Length: 221
Ligand SMILES: Cc1cc2nc3c(=O)[nH]c(=O)nc-3n(C[C@H](O)[C@H](O)[C@H](O)COP(=O)(O)O)c2cc1C
Image 1 (cartoon, rainbow, N blue to C red):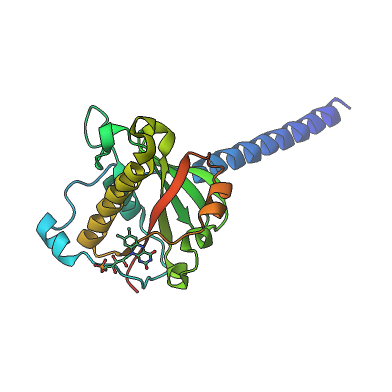
Image 2 (tube, rainbow, N blue to C red; image 1 turned 30 degrees about the horizontal axis):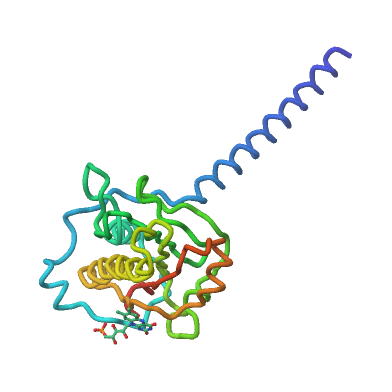
């Protein structure tokens, strides 16, 4: 009898342990796949600035292969990462108001660039690249689209000029991307085409957050 009870207790404790292990693994792996922790920037890669400028061009044909983690990491940092101890960034912005947020659209979901922690914060599951592609079908194979959204509420001191300032700042982020891609031989095109209203809904943007432009990026076909 005692042996029987002991045996049953062992069985119950085995299943509880198994259940807890599965739950912990599931939660941890969901956490791990949610955000993408990016590599520290590799400051030793790339061509000279003159070579990159001489090779910068728009390219609209992409291999559908995903970017490597190293390329993704350095691309985001080049776009608008922190490059100084005082927290300032690779892209200048009017009065350093840094109102541009970068969203990365990939096959498995949408991520927001957290520049302070240099990671991509997972914000939406699923393939929503079509909303950034808009009417232009050629971008359908690009594995990555970076969208620049300007928070014009940060620019209220510029009055009626706030949208212009945000667009200028987005253009500078985009040019950082253009030059990184030229330097690394990545296919890339800066774009204004996109479904602005659908993007605002998807990302739950406020009336002050304006999708301004995007870059379609990938490896050459
Ligand atoms: C602000 C801006 C918006 C653009 N929008 C688009 C676009 O929506 N779709 C597109 O295919 N190319 C777009 N382009 C790319 C231009 O068409 C391209 O830069 C131009 O034809 C010159 O070619 P290049 O970049 O090879 O020098 C845009 C470029 C800029 C600077």
